[in-house]
Image (tube, rainbow, N blue to C red):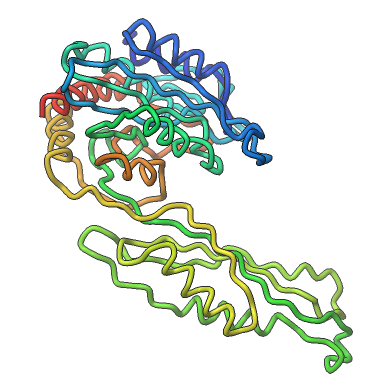
Length: 378
């Protein structure tokens, strides 16, 4: 079997439900060190900053090229979502059935990292600098992962010229889509206080529910925008309503709700947060926003063309440049250098019996090798 396939077997077999630490990073380090990479690993979120977050491991590896050469970075995550029940085979015991390799992380995104490692083995060390920016906290809160890696790179004076994130971007077949941007994300918790009382004596109580309903109605009726040339319209969704009232004859003391907004580059997380706060206060409530990421766009140009050419040479397809879907760690890496996401087919990510076509692993490794070589020579 190919090196990409062998790499994928080893990575999938290392259980790494988010937040990932330990064995899976041992496996990746053992792959990179023989290829000439200096590997630095560190843990964050283990209480050193006063937080109670679970420990998160991160890995930065670099193979330096000649002085003044270009620097191309691969980025991704080794943590995976919990596998859940009902798999046809053990989720962390990779198994080939037919033309597919099954296992948690096969496409999101241990398979892609396996291909990255196989790809750099084919790129001469004197072609330029290559690095790996790998976290164990992308599927979780993402507080101590890629952001901590960026802090490390800045402290060390390390500056990639281009970065490719190996998220599973392909839809129907390998190579049909790349992500040149993503919408931003903000989640906002809403509360309205009232006064508890008996439903038969409403004058002695203050029901917060009507005010919450009016607030949510105003928010639901907001027209944020009509989209842009590259982004779909922003959308606000009500994701939770909680009255926590177990008795049918009690006016509740508090009403809670949560909304989630995915927004394009006509907005910022701060501007949307202010808008929601004003609406909440209008109805006697409070809003507590948490901004997960801002929108970003790497406009079509040299980098996207490098990727498109590499994909077409291997598959015959020209990938669609898209900004659809959820967020990724590219939302942080965009502050470092131009970043684009490209990877395996995403049909089974986060699903039971996650699987990747074995042939796609080999193809993606060759695509990644073409991309890295072209980027270093650009």
